[in-house]
Length: 169
Image 1 (spheres, helix red, strand yellow):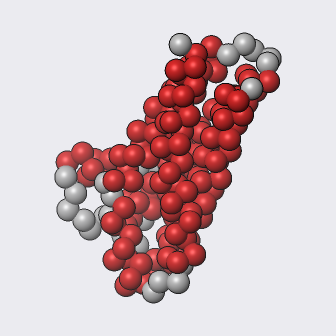
Image 2: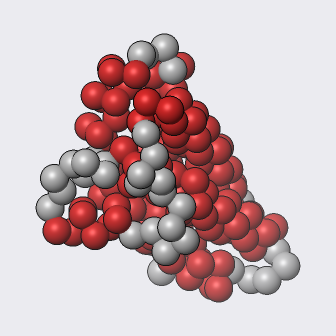
């Protein structure tokens, strides 16, 4: 059972890492875009990235937590799995604290279906600036969104590598 859980955990973490890494790798090209082009391409990521990333992150965190609970405490494997778990939780926190409010900003004028509309409108801390002018703040939102994905890609990579090391041991 443990090898199956290890493979499942690695697969889910890889799924979580994929969208964040893709966003980080496309950052240099997107930073060269003007306002109109950037605002035109930004919404194309939804819903594909949302489903893949969300499933990988949520299920990956749960799978890695279960793996952590089944790994002998104090062993090298345990500390590698613990590092992976912390990295994944931090990655998820960056999404909710930095990326998600900006997603709400990008999609505020889009006609989303009921599930997507509810998900992207969710902002319990009321951090999205719905009344803010795109003219004034689009670069601030762009920079925040792009930086958050670089941080998320780094955290996901750390999580994946720590988990891969634990499996290799």
